Length: 307
Image 1 (spheres, rainbow, N blue to C red):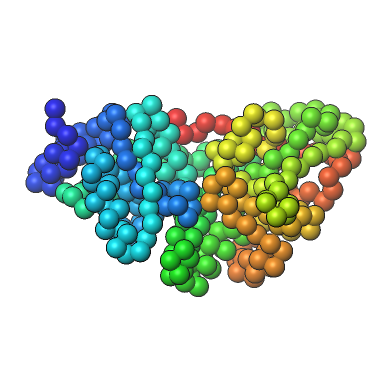
Image 2: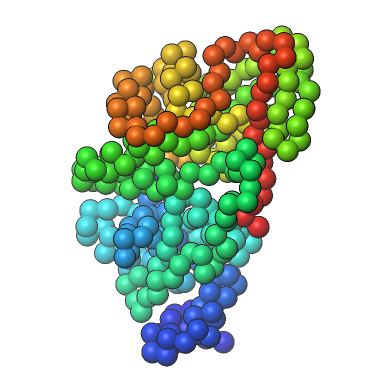
């Protein structure tokens, strides 16, 4: 049986669709792949190929080692994650939700650039009602990865910062909420709309750092939320940038994806982000933490659209 590297060499010669499909199938079936990651973002290492965000995957450990040596010469740190077959499709879906579009296989050898969406189907939500669309923020995570990787080596530009802030401003998020003391009645299964039947108390958990500062955690998607809520104790409520302005007044700041890229936003930073916001997004405003009787509440639901 040919190795993936042999298939890549063959494809560089024959450019056949059959060989290309064999490479994709082999990527799905090889026991172990090695992924280049960034220690600054807790995500795949990001670079741009043909102006598209690319992740770097290696089919042999030695190929990754050569790539790491080259990258270190550019004073860029990369780390290694081994991906096993049992987690293969989860890995490809994580690459999608993080804003990548291309896969570069065995950079530094005979390499192949292929579209991520030749490996997995790109989720499309044109026919999904707005309220039922899943919360994903691939463009925000891509902008964050790009900014923090360059910031770590003192090469971040104003344009990178502007794009990053613009994405924070326009994104929708998941906010965790303890609804154990809420008494609600679901009124619409299709829209997940509920009515608060009695005065209820909603608890919003805080994260405390080593200097005893408190932050409200916001999440870009359900995968990031579950890193925080591993026991599935909380509900997810859909919020936006405007809601951050309320919560930040009751804490030291906001953290986006605290167990991922960990974007810390203070009150001053929030004002700076707002100045570059170019689009008003619909919000679910939370003006008080005590719900009044017959208040309508919208809860997020975890749906697996990526199978």
